[in-house]
Image 1: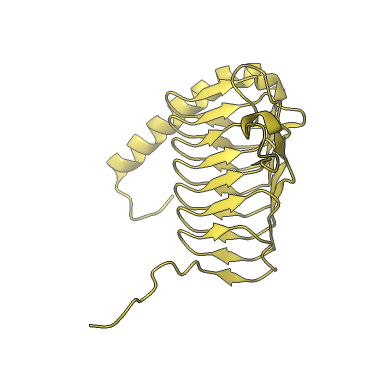
Image 2: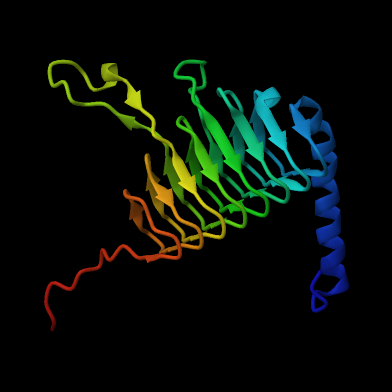
Length: 213
């Protein structure tokens, strides 16, 4: 812990961490596997835990929602952080449209209020950082037949891959079928619809200059 933090603040941090560990001791009993400490914040919703595997020191922060019902499960590597208000949803709440699932590598984190729609397979590598309010959608609706409703045409699922050591800025949206190569940086607010080569820097320039004063 940082030496500049005052003693009273350290005590406060230790106490809050201890409460999260205690919650984790209870919640881990309902998971398929949890290898080490599990830290669980307040008002965290975990369903279908027998499909969830956690490595060491995984953190589910306050108000996170982790839905485990899916074909391949949710796998969280060592030291993964799922931040406040993140929603991980592979399937519908009522058992229809069973999704594939999520694998996220060690030391990676999903920033606050992110959405991970892992109906198709989502694979996130090691040491990946997502900023706040990022969204991943691993499916697309079919809409080719104009004679019937879009809803009745089903979906296709290619999946999403984010390779190791990437930094995904806040409010980034990643659509189905995308692979983001190792070591890439995606600027805040970018809409990613195509593959990103390794070691790339991508910025979505939406603020176009119409004219000068």
